[in-house]
Amino acid sequence: MSGLFGIVSTGNCSETLFYGTDYHSHMGTEMSGLVVVGDRIRRRIRDIRLAQFKSKFANEYKTMTGKIGIGVISDFDPQPILISTRFGEFAVATMGRILNAEELVKELHDQGTAFSEISGAGINRTEIVARMIARGRDPVDGIVRAMERVKGSCSLLLVTQDSLYAARDNRGRSPLVLGRRGGDWGVASESCCFSNMGFRIERDLKPGEILRIEPDNIQTMREGLEQEAICAFLWIYTGYPASQYNGIAVEAVRERCGRSLARTDSVEADLAAGVPDSGTGHAIGYAMEAGIPYRRALVKYTPGYGRSYTPPSQEIRDLVAEMKLIPVREVVEGKRIVLCEDSIVRGTQLKNLTVQKLWENGAKEIHIRPACPPLMFPCKFLRSTRHVTELAARKAIASLEGRDIEEVQAYLDESSPQYRAMVDWIRQDLNVTTLRYQRLSDMVEAIGLPRERLCLYCWNGRS
Image (cartoon, rainbow, N blue to C red; front, side, top):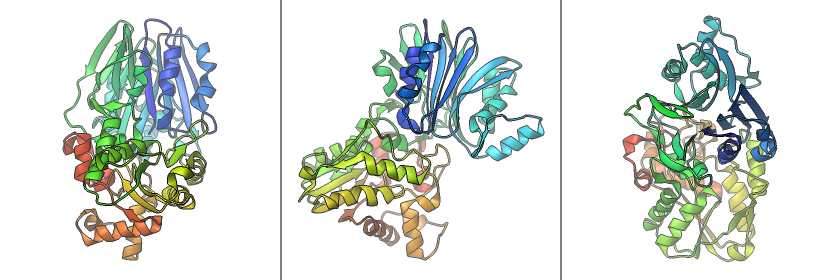
């Protein structure tokens, strides 16, 4: 997804920028970057595929001095992008996904625009946004124009020589949260970054809202829009447990998801366990509702391995998953285990690198309980899921139908025989005793927002 952090401080902002950005390390594994505005705009970008953000910037940030800064943990392109325009220099960092990137590049090429940030993956998506903003009369006009042209989603932070601009995408699919510490202002994708740095959460930015923050002033440059479709997967998996969006805490939602799974379950088990880290809250809720112990059948070796979901390569994802999860035989052996998982995306890691470890360590029964329904559609907006052919549910449907099909409506109905056959195919493929997914209505209820304010595209294909 990527994670953004911005700061406007009464003093030197670089230390706060360093730690605030680091609290977004769970949002990406590819690239990271910092920009600090002092006597000029200074930028540093580093590759974090083989090293953590902290190790790359622990000394770097100390050489950067200024009162305004932005940082990004990127899931894809190197950023922030620094650019010179008719209204001065600015640097911008983005999160989201641009579906019409090729169309925008052609349009900009036709207008005489050149691109400099090119890699094996093509033109840098953040540079596309930067070039569109540069065609505006000023930063706000440029941001509005870019937001209107982008299909998909794009939230961003932009700094000029004297201001920080924060803009949430027009449907609010990704979050931006405003925090305050005395005279300092912070903007973050993940609100968990604020607490330990002494910030108080002020509010969430509204969809489409643009703020301009200066050392002595904060101003709404564009009012928020009414329509919201915030990504529901933030609460289920992507977000950090200590974060909150729209005032709704991630950990509380995960516990409610677990309770909901237990209320509609009849399986007899000795313990509930979670696939760490994101499955932990779901398992705690399940255990509380079911009246069985919560125990750590699997522990994660945190120091060396991050999320196995975010790297773009399946080979790297599998390696991380294999190495980071360690079974505890004394907890597992001879036990009937309810294993709570945030979701089943591809199913390969769960089958080969999690379930297999539990069987090898003597589990008697394994009952998988994902906290959301089967994922059916690749995410169009935030890179949450990637390709149809990767999704476990679509692999099941293709096997049952004998071919790939586009019309999967019958498989979305939780009461249909097609749905039951799909779930049983996945159960057999995973080699587990039972498998039962969360119902979509129960997941929405656990989040606590009206269905029309949530993006549920991954499950129902409606944007």
